[in-house]
Image 1 (cartoon, rainbow, N blue to C red):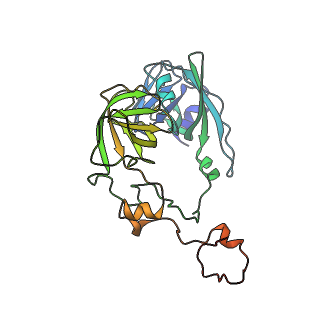
Image 2 (cartoon, rainbow, N blue to C red):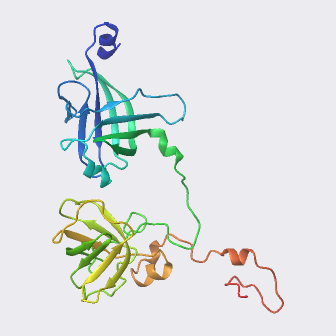
Image 3 (cartoon, one colour):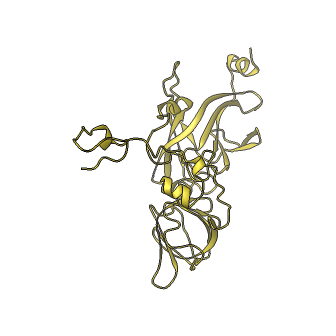
Amino acid sequence: MTALQAHLDSGATTIARAWAVTRTDGVVLGFTDHDADLAFDGVTFAAHSGLSARALEQVTGLAVDNSEAAGALMDAGLNESDIIAGRYDGAGLVIWQVNWADVAQRQILFRGTLGEITRAGGAFRAELRGLSEALNTQGGRVYHGACAAVLGDGACRFDLTRAGYSATVPLLAVDGAQLRFAPAPSVSAGWFDHGRVTVQTGQAAGLVGLVRHDRAGTDGARVITLWDSIRAPLVPGDMLRLDAGCDKQPGTCRLKFDNFLNFRGFPHIPGEDWMTAYPRQGQPNRGGRIRG
């Protein structure tokens, strides 16, 4: 019998729950429903967070554990600006049952991630998703002509630090999803199409935007239009890193990046027009494109 179980069996308990939230940027926050802070595993669990959780629904087998947490939005804890910015999207979560009189006596009740977060009236509610939630994600490889890798990842293997493929530049102006930078004569307009913008400094540091268009403005400035605006304030002078874009096509991989050996698509796979074609007199089928 463990010390915690012996404490639970004693009939007079000093039990609290503690939550540790680990964001994707590495920031770890701790919360507890006890009336005083707790500390263990290098994390301080704040008592003033007002965080609470519904009873956990945990079952055997591969069914998804389901619950939710609720609490007040506070500058010292989970605040509205960080939630809007997406800093808690997919954050890891561990919930402990702990003896607050002796924090060495504890056990994990739940391990998973934060799901959908809603806000209203200065409070938030967050869906809790168990580890088996990942089993709902489709896996496997898709066979099509475009590359399945992400530029610069372990499958692509392209080094984005190579000269000319990324640049860290100051922001001149921002208008929603449209960002303006000083002229970049070293690369042509469209070089950053399908690329990424990563904020390096300021309130939005660490956030990433996907590039929709890259063009030269009438005043000579470089104009980058994102698919969606950065969900945190940007101001002139903030430093942003621009990464060259890839449209996943074999020609781009070969000519723009000289990386065709790592191309993760199937450029010669027959298309639907070939599979639905029928023989025609005088038009032998040699595996090429079908012409009408």
